[in-house]
Length: 337
Image 1 (cartoon, one colour):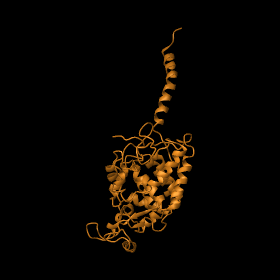
Image 2 (cartoon, rainbow, N blue to C red):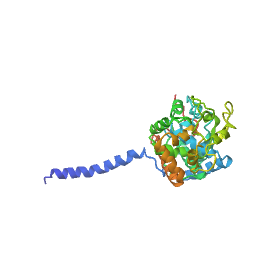
Image 3 (spheres, helix red, strand yellow):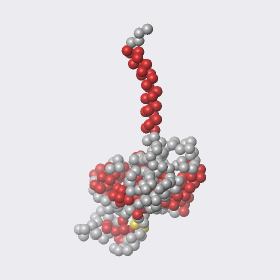
């Protein structure tokens, strides 16, 4: 019996659909992060990370902010791939000696401890990049901040970038345009910039990071009118013109260890510690309005912070067969010369 052209088209379509579905679903999955990634391969992962963070913060409250900051400094360089954790061995030039990290980035031993526990439970399964991302979320929650489901499935880098660490991480004296540009280059917008800056509601900064605001070192000899002068006098008592570079001051002096929206309230009152904090309120109308919004509404801040953290955690992750799953977060499994 003769078959019509439409019959052959229909037959071809039926045969092709399974192949198309297989292609569509098999390939993108390799590049897709999702919270249940380790559900079968390491079912107790999140409990292990949470317990490790809790122990570390119980020993030192400041560690919550340090782990959160470590995740920022990782993602802004080559994406969220744990490159910041690599030591200077096996031909690696470590990011730990960059200007933003030297004598500043900390928490590496905590990640080591958590990784060791994870390796006992699930050998060679979970990446250091995912552990660092989970630790940042748990540090936020344990400090009183919002909870969010962390998309997982990242793999670890096979290298580091000292130059990327030096140039991509925003500095405490960055201009508003520099901040906007550096965030935009990572796919983050103005809302992300202001919300993620809210992580400064916990943690400390060194005298060397804000000294220029205290002693008319802006180049024109004028006082910094965006800094409350009573607050400035308090800061000068522990941050002299020279020396004391590593003396620490809380980024949020009102609720030092609590994750809340006082960071934004402080900025409005000219009591933001870093220049890069204060300019969010004084140099750009859109960021100013966001600062006011989050100062008034803690719930909106929490909601946006969680969204922006997920977005930042998705900056160019290594997935599928890219990179590796490091056994030791400080070094590659094998040297790659």
